Image 1 (cartoon, rainbow, N blue to C red):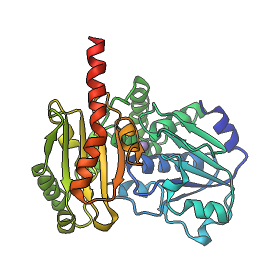
Image 2: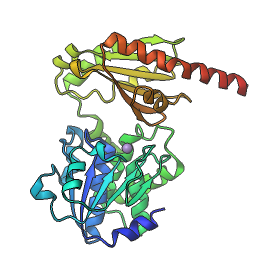
Image 3: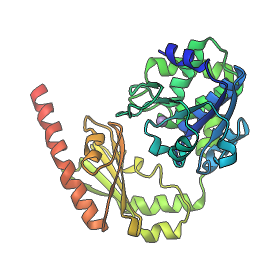
Length: 329
Ligand SMILES: [Mn+2]
């Protein structure tokens, strides 16, 4: 699967690797895993991100540094690689650097609807994570995983699959995870401890208040919760990332939504499905997008309007899902 990508790499020497803005475990793990491997192959590699690496992933940057791009740092490369996103707009200042210092752009990703502008791309929507793709690529190349590569890639697969619980996890995912465990000289609890046991009291308090706001709609098949501006102000800087998983775990719920009030910037909506309902399609009606089971969108607000408009746009998907079930029976 990586034949052409691996072949094309050999024409380059000095490579800038980018992970997407508002980075997560998958893009950081992939960036560090790939950078370490490229380095081991003799390439001159630098890893960039405009945004800071989240606290629970800081330990990964000890394996390979990730720095913000500056004009001085960006000159002299002959290749760019984008990870875990397939539109340059997901990569902060990257489009501006590309204009100033034009070079070929390669991409490795697992999101749908890729832009058709890459010189080389491995985009596999069925893959659990970008880290899984990078691991397959290293294996296809015949390189061994160093313990550092293994830790970074394992951490990314873990965070992007809900600890190997999502439908995107295939036998191939678990096989490569086994290889990473073997190579990594770590045990799963050591990585889980770093990834998931670094919550602050502010995060727990925000969680508590968002749980209190949960409401059910559409025959109790839709659950949603709201994070108000006041809640955000009280818990400044706290990540709202995992909150939507809680309403999603209610029995019978097919889709959960999180509405986050960002004031003048509008309302940010996170959509999560654990059914045949495609939240990518739903988010697209609001000019957003993502995956079938995880997507994001914006609404200009105010909050009440955002909630009612979003539910109204999504309700037909629930009817469709019911009809399909009946025709199968
Ligand atoms: Mn990912």
